[in-house]
Amino acid sequence: MTVGELLINGGWAMVPIYLCSALALAVFCRKALEFRAEKLSNLDWLEGVVESIENSEIDDAREQAKKASHPVGRVVVAMLGILRKRPDRVEAEARRVGSLELQRLEKHVGLLSFIAQAAPLLGLLGTVLGMVELFMSLQGTGASNVDAALLASGIWKALLTTAAGLMVAVPALAAYSYLNSRTDNFRLVLRDAIERVLTAFPTTGGDGQKHPRPQLVHEAADAI
Image 1 (cartoon, helix red, strand yellow):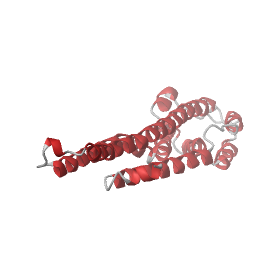
Image 2: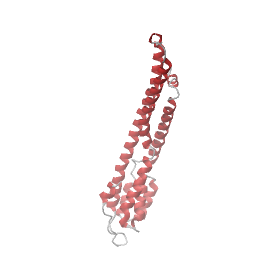
Image 3: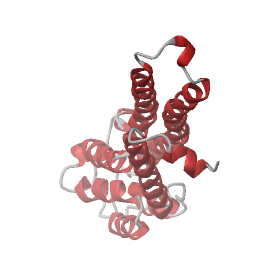
Image 4: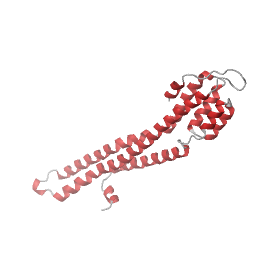
């Protein structure tokens, strides 16, 4: 008997488990492709941005960050955009935009954790219902009249849903752990990038005027 035939014998209780499996696969593929497209670990462009900031070339630094098409780049663009108008709000802008970028990356990832918890419960529910149906069909028959083969067949068919639920839950949990580790690593990268940008701001601009250096560098980064 093939795996497909085994799954078919699980009955209608397998339907929600099938749906969980398809949903988990769709979420993981979408987020994995999204993370790959964002190139989260590629920050080669940041060196040029920091150098331009140190030389008071704020407009050039902003253009470089914008061309990077990177989540960190969008945070840096927001920080540099508000620097001249409200230098006291740079840290707040870093927190706001950084939080939005993290929320965007974490969107739907929690669904994998839910599936990893729900799939075994759905499988257990299917097993319990299958056992109830089995014993209801045996109700009224004498102990000597119970067909052992029929009883065994009903039990293993009922247990199929539990096995299927675990088969869905384990990969879903692994996928959640992988994507969650990627977002955690990005959070560290984002904190480091914000600190580098904030500490690169010169106290004196190219026009010879004093520009207040943003304070609370660590607090701004730790708030992400």
